[in-house]
Amino acid sequence: MHELSLARDLLAAIERKLDRSDGRVARVSVSVGSAAGIVSESLRFAFRVICEGTRLDGAELSITTVAARSRCADCGIVFHFDGLIGQCPGCGRLGGELLSGDEMILRTIEVADV
Amino acid sequence: MCDTCGCGAPAVRTIDVNERLLALNTAEAEHNRAHLAKRKIFAINLMGTPGAGKTALLEATIALWRESRRILVIEGDQATNRDSARIRAAGATACQVETGLGCHLDAHQIHDALHHFDLGDGDLLFIENVGNLVCPALFDLGERLRVVVTSPTEGADKPLKYPPMFRAAHVVVLNKCDLIAHVPFNLGEWTEYVRAINPHARIIQTSALSGEGVGELLAEIDNVRQSFFPGISA
Image (tube, rainbow over all chains, first blue to last red; front, top):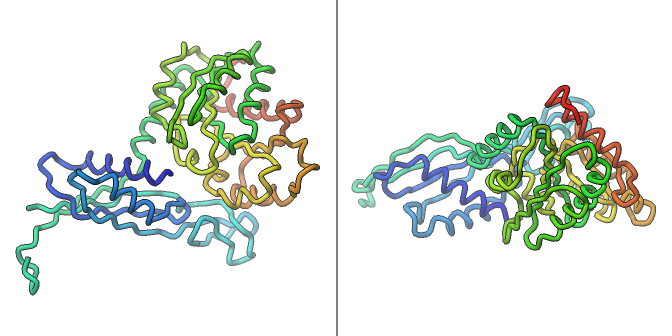
């Protein structure tokens, strides 16, 4: 279940960015390409579990899904799509060369300053 | 906190990060890659379905290459050291990583495994990943070549069902090709689906048991190895 590995990695990445003096984390924002295959609810669940007992306990995980982009292998047009595999709106061919959309990026950390 | 205007609520400070997840694994993978490059060691990440024939392909490879090349194998399985025992019996050096609940190998495990070997310049390192068409696709190990192994018994639609794995492949191997005529498997459809997900992957049919196509796979591995380490002898 790679959402658990991702949640662990996310927590480690956040902790690397925080100072010891930083307090409670209120919210973490990530953006995930739709072709990455991440199930948002699973990631939120895994993150909640991983953060228990840490200064991220109770932090909101905000996940923005970004549409992916492919270039059709037949007609060459570049198109956006949601989900794991696109279909060319021009010629109908499935798939194509994935140009972007499998990235997973930690965007911001919101720390509550008491 | 005041319900009217929100006064008394703790101030929130935003830290901008914009860093890819798995950055730690990627950094370790780059470290592995650089470490191997210094010794001109070519690493192959062998992934695929459980039972597709990854270990059998390695045995066939070792049989053909053990006199001419020094082969090291890192074996990844949830449990047992059965595969590393097979590799040693075939005549190559193996290190077994038992991942327990882990469904994929990661760069840190490879880094540790490398310390078990007496590395030599120009060695060939095969990393046989945990059999799994999902998670290994996400984890860079420091390899130069990714080979994904499947077989006709899985049906023709697996490339559509597991896009990240097939997208990640440099080479897609259809092993047990001798079974194509005996199971409901449409080779044309399968090929089309691989091409839909990955227009650039090299597709090779093999039978690890009979040896068919193994030479073609090894030639491809050699070609790519030469492209990274020009002039390297066998």
